[in-house]
Length: 87
Image 1: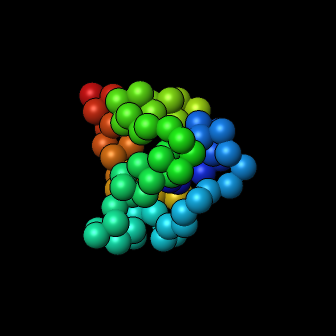
Image 2: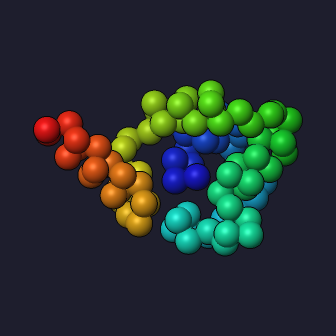
């Protein structure tokens, strides 16, 4: 959800049929981001498959921009990965 333009490319759309809380990490837990993404795919006439759609989106995303948009979890995750790689 933080890679909006890339997600729109995947959906082959110019805009979303649904809106979400920004920052996306503050999304309501009764309507988590995964469910919103599933709805976006359904509305685009597609089936969401996290094992293929997530890598497709992440490969085209700038991790630094994602870190700025998702400082609560994604940024910490990436920082931890860099620490592991330094070992």
